[in-house]
Image (cartoon, rainbow, N blue to C red; front, side):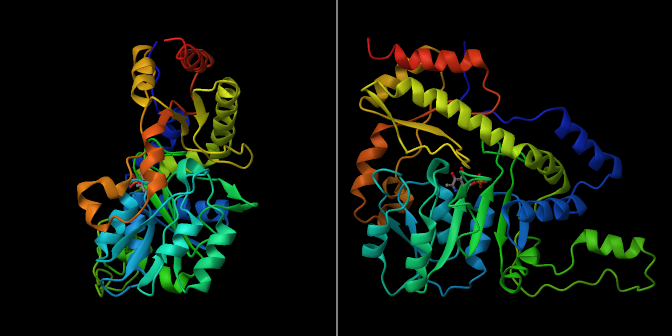
Length: 377
Ligand SMILES: Cc1ncc(COP(=O)(O)O)c(C=O)c1O
């Protein structure tokens, strides 16, 4: 038996939804994107959302919205995917790597306080694996330092902390709908926020800086406008080709309806895994999974002899992953490295195991059995 690590849960409903876009023959940035943005805002409880083609783009634009002067610093966790810190570089800012909390693997509030100096302008917490950073404490701390908070929610969609959606605690929330994530649009991302004045310009910035997208111009002409200047638009700002399109949004609208059910299914699978490992002394959950109102993207464990464990699982056809080698260890980011001893020691034990809503009972049993049979080898 072969068990995949991640697999998008898509089917007939998504296909039907794409068909709608085919029928209207409007595939690019259009009404479906607007509908998805509105539904997403309602779902998480934010005023506005802007659909983009990835979370990487979302993080880039979220920072760009503040027009921080070149050379200012942004605090990011050492244990995260490249995009978090890459967005800082895109904006000609400097990433300051902060160590992670030993228990949650989220950004360490103590180390944040140590690493923050007068040049820091923002902090980008990552809800690692989907586990919430204590946002009440982080936001209060950031406010006291005059920092903006951009939540990197790539690992979570629909998760809550103290009853409030992740991504709505900070100034801006950035989400990923890449194919392996909690819900997908193939590739895709969303920027959500409560300050329309600051963020609405991003609707242009994601569309090469043009202040009137093609759909708006098309709608005006369809409505029989006699204005012969309908083609006219202005570009006042640097923009990017970062838009979400109607095909992605068609998938997203259906996935959003399934999201709560998919999150509950993930909770159920994680619960079964936790039950299996609770009495084993060679394997432990990497983060303190709280299986309520949760949206965990990955099931990650800590194992002493990681390479041997990975080889054991591979031999049984169970795919595994490692999330992540700390970014300051990557050649590009080495020159920004500071002391992040917890990330640098714990990452060596991390192994990601298969987690996706469509895992079958046989597949789950096979993963559990493979974990149990490791000790004896
Ligand atoms: C923490 C984190 N931030 C950002 C991203 C980027 O997401 P996307 O692939 O949608 O650009 C990822 C992707 O895995 C991620 O893990």
